[in-house]
View 1 (cartoon, rainbow, N blue to C red):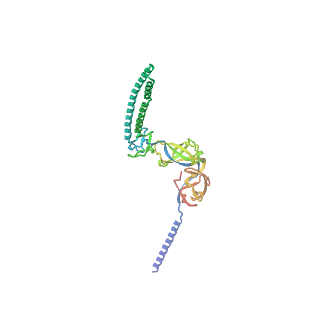
View 2 (cartoon, helix red, strand yellow):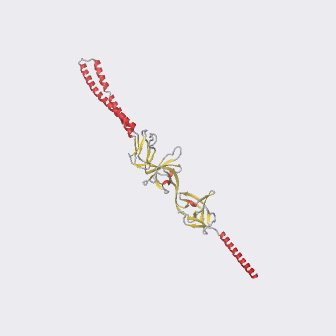
View 3 (tube, rainbow, N blue to C red):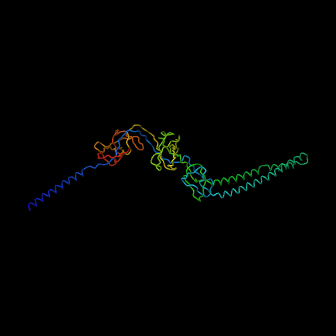
Length: 376
């Protein structure tokens, strides 16, 4: 029994010792510091240009709002928005029955006026002959002064040209009716794309509202307002970036076509027009755009990606990685910035490794593990 008790005691001590060793290992594991994965880039010198974004709406350089010229009911719509159209192509037709009736009335009026003109021509010739006859009789003393004046008055009355005027008036009325009937066919004045059709079948077209919009979108224009403090940086012919997010993330290249020399009297801003080519028709008229115009620029200055700089309590903070893979907080001063980089005027030197991803999660002294994938 003593031997058994002694063996049990030894076994119990061994179990207790193993438990203590296991607990120590777990405490050591708990005490081990966790590394935080981050991405970094090196601070380097580069050229940088500060840019300002100005909003605007894309329009075709040649964009036409087609106004109906007669109030009439829509009888046919031959194109739909987005269709390519050519100059002279019919877009819509309107009910021309009223104008067709007016043409018939005009034709009848012309015929009547021309018949009156023919009758007047015959009467005028007879009056002329009678006047000449009375003149001879008067000269021979066989007709009185009163007879001569009566024959003269009858001749002059028929030669006033009133019948010719009546014919011209009737023809003008006929031409007007024919023109109005022609207005019932609404055509495109230019080659381009049907931007919108603003009427439906059965609607009554109004001369005060556009029936359709046709735009030549092969060349586009953006009109924007520029502040007086930055208008001096913009020159006609300058190449600028145009961001149209609806058509893609990459900027399009545009050219400054004109800059107004006087400001808008109400907004105190200057109008700038930018044109860009659109041969592949990726950009649609009416899309929202941002014109990116460079103002100040510097060459060969220390820069880091925008993502590396964190604003904190009125300061600009960058986290670097030291030789022991520890994050170190550095206060920096910034200057120019573009859409990717910012100039660092103090706080860093060329080659410093700055955190671009994960920098919002670290603190001064945090152990980090640098992984691939930093900003380029």
